[in-house]
Length: 456
Ligand code: TYD
Ligand code: MG
Image 1 (cartoon, protein in one colour):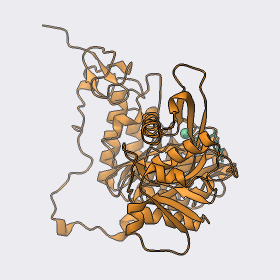
Image 2 (tube, protein in one colour):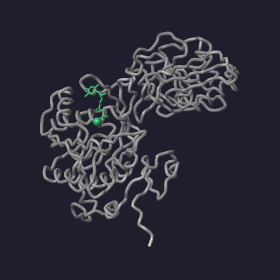
Image 3 (cartoon, helix red, strand yellow):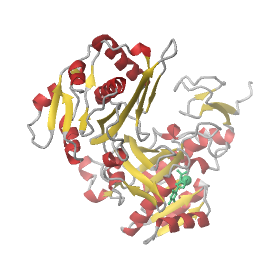
Image 4 (cartoon, helix red, strand yellow):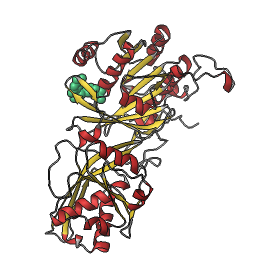
């Protein structure tokens, strides 16, 4: 009889399992992500979802299921509540992913403070920091009141016992990559441990009605499984992102069983922890150069929320056979396409110039509504003529050089009015559908040529 296999290969990006090593994962197409892990007898005995359930479930009619308003709890942060779809749903499993050091523990500690202050029973379990370290962080953040307890623990079997004993309303697991189950023979952080641990947490959340926040580090190297391995198991997936060098952080909803995705929350990291940024447009436009060529204010939508940002372009004579092009914060291919439109439809010799496009502030935006802003920034830099700094520009550009309609034009215009802009260049089609307003001068354009002719 052939010897039973004791190890298997797992993709640490998506959790794909294979009997042999492969250079590229066939599921997520990432290279060099397969790692070997033991799947010994111990492990094989616990198949995913086969553990004895904590509480026997019973069938119920829709009419017997209550969905009272109190099932949603506000976290005390409007920005986080919005991303969660209006507060956290009791008994849900929320994954907060992000790069190490981005501020996940800080955010969740602050949320714990708020939830405890509003009368919830909170348990914060850390597998990474000592109680002293947590206390130091809490001191930095400020006062913590209410029923808030901390524990340093990495064994999930112990954690389960604690939860059943203490009956908290909210539990934080920081982080899933440090947790382990005794039945599984592989090391903490391995794909099978991370998966099994999450499946146990799911059972606890649903069985006991406890809200559980799981922290997951995004790892680029090493053998630690990333949060994508458990994305499919949890109710809500949030990613905390941001430029390490910039102070603002964006919380992005990627999956939400209880609300819409695409929503973002903006925070700023300060000495005393994270603070909410209620008006990100103001924040993004801070320190904008006045009267400089190649800078255009654009309006992008993040979910239902308009955000004004500055698109910058620098176009210079090229000394190389193949001109250099870069795009920071937006899609490189889209920038190339827009330059081709300028070359063909407006007869600018873009191939003679190097071009650098940048979204100021380190934010990433790929919305087609930025097309017209990018074009205007490029032409403004090429001609060395500034676009009026009190004007915002948005619109999608088609391959024949036409300016196409974008969604939610009215919200974008309102945001510009709110921030004191005096003019707005937008697709004519959007303008035709909009109510007349005295608050701002609206310039409708049908083609890229028409838009450029507005540049004095
Ligand atoms: P942390 O929450 O530990 O990150 P994560 O849990 O995602 O790994 O955040 C650590 C960073 O935040 C660290 O670089 C210091 C910074 N920080 C502040 O700037 N101000 C603060 O009040 C706190 C608590 C942290
Ligand atoms: Mg941490």
